[in-house]
Length: 54
Image 1 (cartoon, helix red, strand yellow):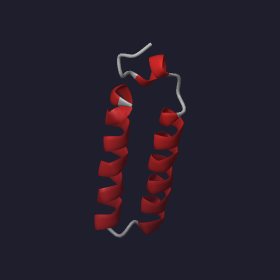
Image 2: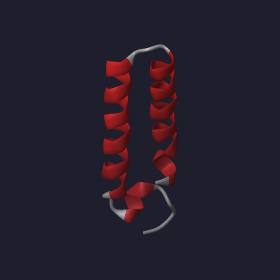
Image 3: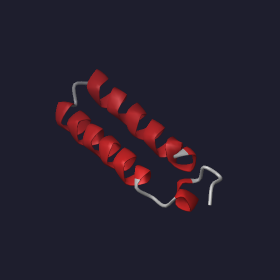
């Protein structure tokens, strides 16, 4: 997941911002997006994950 870590970090930053500012529906959607990204990245072929394998 190394090549895609930046995307997870960006979603986490946006999620934190939304929570701090009371944007609860947005925070929920961002958390779902973060979980979806993690799951989808985990299912990529090793060569597409960016971990140097394959």
